[in-house]
Length: 133
Image (cartoon, rainbow, N blue to C red; front, side):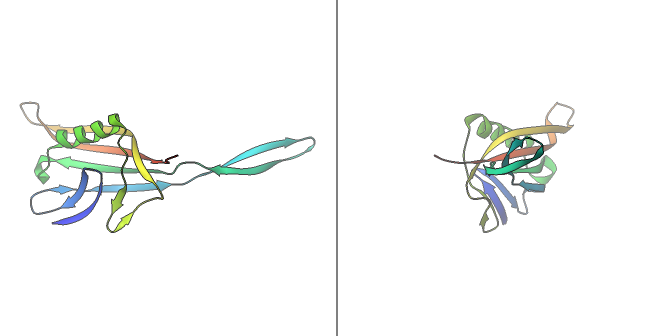
């Protein structure tokens, strides 16, 4: 088994029995500036701090890859609804300076069998850096 990473109990791995990975990971960091208007001059800008980092990634779940898509979607939704806070670890590295919360999930339910069971789904997940007081 090759453990790729995790966010809490959401595990990214590849094994002979199941594949749970992600792709299209994007990490965004932004700074905040205030603009001060001046009479007959260009405005001055002032650095006021930084915004919380965001990370987004896409996951693909399929019974054909040994994964129950609805079970994985339920884990993500439960964590999002509880406001669960965890480190995002990929390989040996914890990403960001802080832990992360899930702010958004978008689910594309792609394939069903003749009994209405979900066979394959794509899930886009957005994380926000969680800064403790």
